[in-house]
Image (cartoon, rainbow, N blue to C red; front, side, top):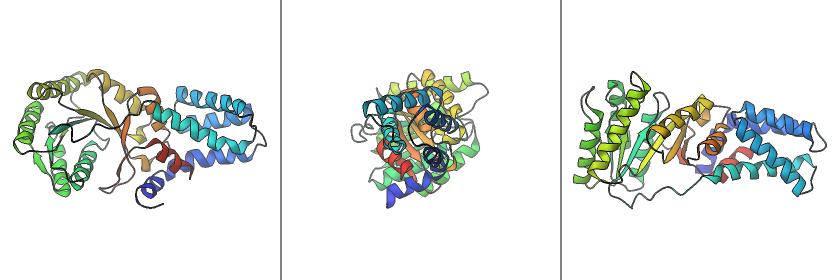
Length: 306
């Protein structure tokens, strides 16, 4: 296990301890698959934030497959569980849009404060630059001076340019200027940071709609991606956040799930994939600049069970 997979495997240690090892302990206490064993597994899934509906779906799938495969051997649970998890994680998956289809390829990043949004943008910028792309970042969270300064630090680390205005400036104006600059400079990827908190949710959503509208007027179809950053440690609350932003912005195109290495409740990935019908695009499994990874369902499940 080297590189990509090792980082993923190491980043899921807490979830593995909270989910897979507890299931392993439960299985060892039984000599056959029965309702009592499935009830224990159900309780473990719920405690790791898989969620009621998704847990029910997994348990019903396990029941059906034990009948189909005519097995009562508890050790078969591992493979059956992997199958159910991969199925849930791939149902709404789709390949990410090509960065080469549009120039600039514009990504608008949303999410509440504290989710790791600005850090994620810095890591994305670094990654795209290392892939040979010319990247520009826009600091459209003008309501917090600290957010602009933090993004400036990340832009420096990632060795990319930054478009910024003074604190309190119109966020849509920053986005407008950034898109004009991206076109003028032949930028490949423009990543736009946005505010995560205003005085009310209504104000925030209206501001985000305005940014999206202004961008679309300049170049039809922009932004090409609208990604929401969610903090895995907040559990089911992350689903509420994504639902709110998804409704307000007429559809998110993807989810970036951060801080998976900091929680034992990584089952939230399953709940998010199942309930929101929005693909998980990337996951954060560490603090370093290269710990943001493309999400691959099979690799994720394999890392959980290895």
